[in-house]
Amino acid sequence: MRVLVRRCWASLPAGGGVGRRSSPQWRTLAGLGGPAGLEDGQGVRVRKKPPWRVLFFGTDQFAREVLRELHAARENKEEELIEKLEVITVPSPSPNRLPVKQYAVQSQLPVYEWPDVGPGEYDVGVVASFGRLLSEALILKFPYGILNVHPSCLPRWRGPAPIIHTVLHGDTVTGVTIMQIRPKRFDVGPILKQETIPVPPKSTAKELEAVLSRLGANMLISVLKNLPESLNSARQQPTEGLTHAPKISAGTSCIKWEEQTSDEIFRLYRAIADVIPLQTLWKDNTIKLLDLVEVTSSALTDPKLIGQAIIPGSIIYHKQSKILLVRCKDGWIGVQSVMLKKTLTATDFYNGYLHPWHQKNPQAHPSQCRFQTLRLPTKQQQKGKKIVAMQQCIK
Image 1 (cartoon, rainbow, N blue to C red):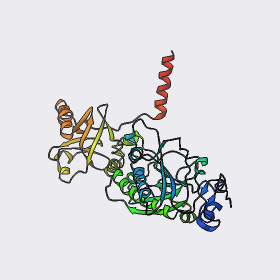
Image 2 (image 1 turned 45 degrees about the vertical axis):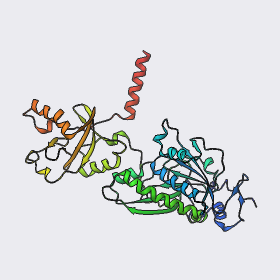
Image 3 (image 1 turned 135 degrees about the vertical axis):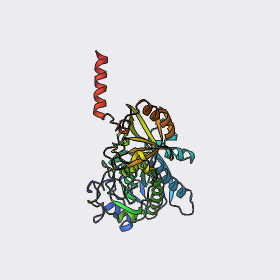
Image 4 (image 1 turned 30 degrees about the vertical axis):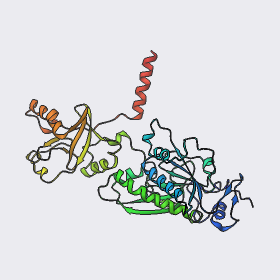
């Protein structure tokens, strides 16, 4: 018996469609019809149970943990869950920048660079933090489609930076979703499995990533053990609760002292500081704030902070704590070190910059010596400058 599976996507809406009405492909592969050892329309043999042939797509540390678990499953000969495992990653001048490529090479797994997906035949694809839209033609090469390990409770935080936005917006609950990829749009496919966990208080995005990567890897293995059944019971994503998690730009790292509260600044710090240091402006120079700390109640009793109106961005050195106190919209944040040409402790910055300024301006109000919001040029402004520069070169 020959079963056509190449056309199974045509009748499905872009957002999913596997739920109440399963396509013929998933019904057949879930054991609702047809003998073992089916073939698709191209003569490729379709397996009804493990071991699976898996092609993995990924790049970063989150994806590395998922790949590591897949590799461990392949090495486990007793369970016979994965027979073949190959890897697709993106081009990079340095393999060390891509944890997935580094792990694959060390583990002697076949690695291909996108858009090369290799010549092999596979049962199912797995995506984790890949960042590339996959075509319908590619998806249809896999009899069981392509699964995505997404670190959020979809449809909340669709997009490339769900963990960062989880921390940035102060979510108290998060999780992992195993979903099926659909072409042309990110993170819109049906959900096969979803689990939630509480967000640990004051955790950074990097710390949360480690927790979610382990959870996601274990959930994926669970799905692969019962893949046809999981696909047959998949449900569409709900229409309510949709939010997007776009990439973080350098502009996001610029603190807006007049607009952001201390809580918002600390959330921003925990969300992106491992990727992009927070930035501000000091005397027309960009300065990076490297180590932020919460301000203790004892520091807030400093006479310099009492009995006067202080403008957001104002800086006061707290000698006992050896930190810079910086005023924001509703309070203060502490800064232990900065980068201005080179890394400086708060004490170094005070001795080299703040103290000399105050000596030259003994009557000045503290608000005259402050950080200011850094306004980075937009892409349109940068594009305009390039056009002007090109025109000048032509002249």
